[in-house]
Length: 410
Image (cartoon, rainbow, N blue to C red; front, side, top):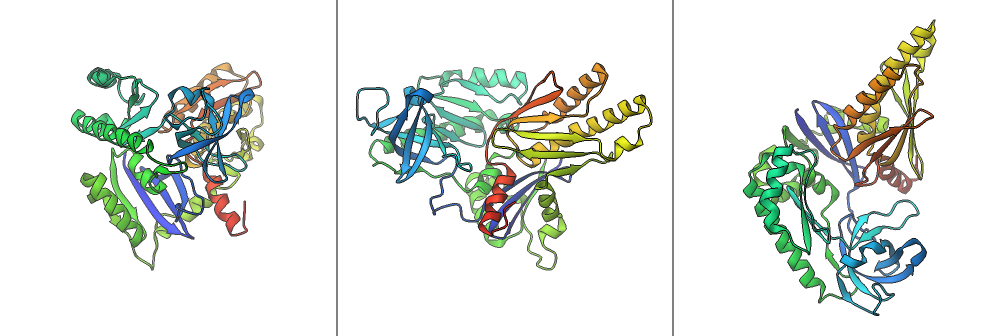
């Protein structure tokens, strides 16, 4: 597979487009300046103070900055690192402890923080409190077993190690070197935390467009095209330090007469990814509606239904639309970065064999997603249930915040 990344700056936002075999499959969007103005990013680490405890929901609220209270699951208390204790109970109001933002604020919901601090590299993640040695499920079993065996000597009761998919094609020594570097960072952070006052930021996550490049799977990567000179300089500096062997991939595109968004139609694709309706080649379409609790995708036969003149033709048309809808729904879920519970209402089919074929097709296309995505089941009402791990805000939320600031919210 041939991969390519486009990064452009427009309207005070930085957008990253991931291409596979010439097609845009992911869009990430972030404000140009993420630091300051009360911004708290995914991965930031603070010394926080327990402001309130709500025992009936097993949660506490931890202040990481004056007036910024974050949700904290009390299950983390046993593994949390306290810099100051205010009482003998496991968790008391006034306690100060090290926490990391695990979920950014969403609409009216406060940010979520955890005591399970993660240190993420390109090939591995070191996790405080979670002490298992794990390997990505996308790594072949033989290599997975080899990694577990070689890393077993690092097993301890303070932190664990997870080997990432990116480690699949690099020498073991490169992975081990990075793990040792993460261990040094781990020791340094907790030593520093013991001497820092409340609300100190112990670790600030890099800008999201840098994280995108750090986390992306590099196999088949042909080039990383950057449409802004300032951005190019910043990314080049990062690559010199962190990914020197990948420096040749960076390309500056600065043709003002024919900008990057015109060359690759990025603006058109972005606008389509924010619309409620996504058309299918068969004449059908998807209606994609995110809600507070879940996302609903409704498959409609559209123009296809009008062509059916018999029950057999109707079934055949439903199968054809559903098969295309399965491919397109999987593509839209990744493109729009939808997460959590996703319910898909496919067109009803009379044959159980056709339903099995549909689920097999849908599961196959969902498996291409680098983010953990699972087809759970089909309900008695014929609704297909999917779950996708939440890593960052969905595209519509990122862009809606941007439009709200301009008074043009979706």
